[in-house]
Image (cartoon, rainbow, N blue to C red; front, side):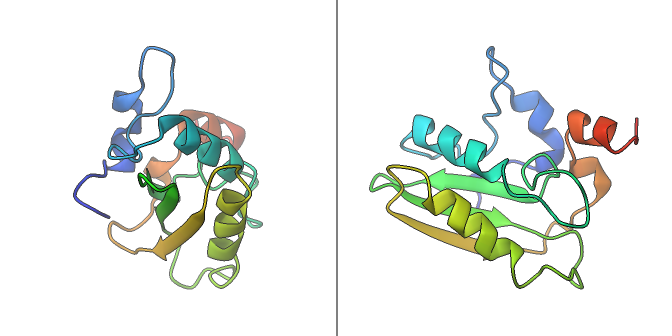
Length: 130
């Protein structure tokens, strides 16, 4: 994760007055475009867990550059995840489908490692964890 990203465990502390998450992509030049990318990523599901990759906490950072290049840092639930080869491609495809995004760069990172605390409350509720 870059120096400009925020620990996903602290995402609830970064909600603005409208309830939008401001923790991902603090250096984004185009917040509206970043918000559209987030919505697109909420359509990508981990096939093993019925929760989208964003709410699952797999997306660590989304930055949109001044020339509308989306850089996404993500992780997987484990290094041995069976969808390790396909899920990052699905994230890239979803982000690339957003009008205005010119290019997408997805980087899989392992630090910090994913754990269930990274899920948002709605995801935990959906999985019966709260």
